[in-house]
Image (cartoon, rainbow, N blue to C red; front, side, top):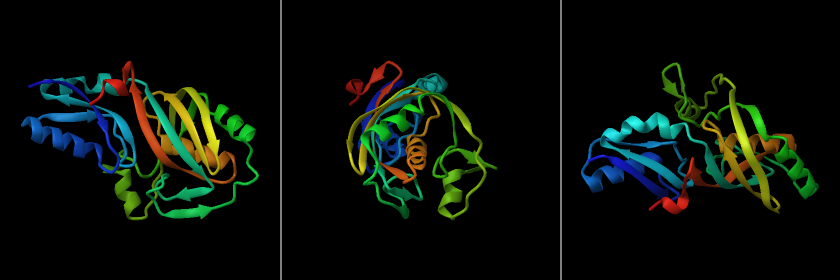
Length: 205
């Protein structure tokens, strides 16, 4: 068996959990996903079956589209609401116009530092393995492109936004950078991937 399956991943499970489930249901040994979604995240996940796993680099290179929500005034160990709170601050003086301005500053080609809680490897080990031990290691900046980024709603302390970006972009890092620019901190509370290249969430099962 070979082919490509588009899955609408629910929250609370890992991308590998989805792959494992599909392997069991289809009784197939060779299967993998393109583009990890955190347990918190939902939405489009591309699963490759059998010989189609050779298409990994093709699908991984596609740009991504997200609908997400961040919470201002809260910084966590993981960059999202599932981590331990590190710092909290008030957001009463932050205006809608200021939020919009900061978001617009991140459009275009920018440098981004990957979060510690990620699967990127450092000296043969994944970063999140170090993070779980409370160890922070050096991370190189990556060049990414944000094609489109706009605020869809501000309901403090929450900000809903739409993001169209290149591969390698971390939504959690973007939220942290926005919070830092606003001098109040921020973390992600919701991520939904709605597009990978020309594939949309409407194509998923």
